[in-house]
Image: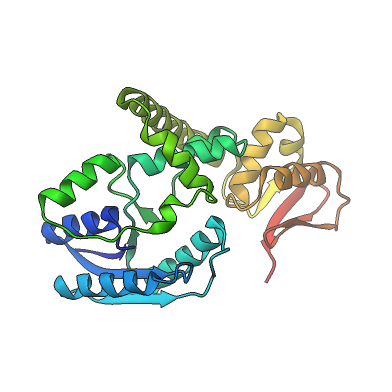
Length: 277
């Protein structure tokens, strides 16, 4: 039996997810809710989710932040996942969220808007389970209505200051066939991503030392992919490009701080990756 931390905001998507998982009766569930402290009435969402957990006789974990009405989407997301991952570690459980097909399309659109490379179409978190990505928002709402579920509407979902909300308007009106083509493209990119990662692993091995000669004599694009792998995908594209330049030019005995707490240490032939403590 898998133990899950179920992230429940109180919205229709997560309420439907919790209902589905509970009805399966195959998992140990713990309900987790994050009150960001962005809206004056957000405490009512927390109380609603707590009652929902009690209705299902499930444990309940929650936290309240005081992010304020000016908090960015990114700041709220970071705070939310910090708590959820902490709860997953505390309970030795998998984290499961209610991300659905429309959420996936919105993320793709946001990444394209920000100038992403191909990886922006293949976003995937190995440490988060998202079983609803095959369902659309409309399908989840129909499921909730069919089962007589109640949920709360988040007023910030209508706030145009948030990029995701502005993009949501466009995604919602895409023809179904267009949505499916985009989802198929994402799936294909995920397949390519896995193949690339397997090939990189075969090429460079497990370290801890890596050949500077190898990184210098392959194409920059291939070197960036390899370097992304050995730094656990923690560096941005510009940081990776600067780190690659250091690999090619740094003197033996030098240390290069690449960012995100990662340093590269050089000998004449090799380099190693270390995490700053």
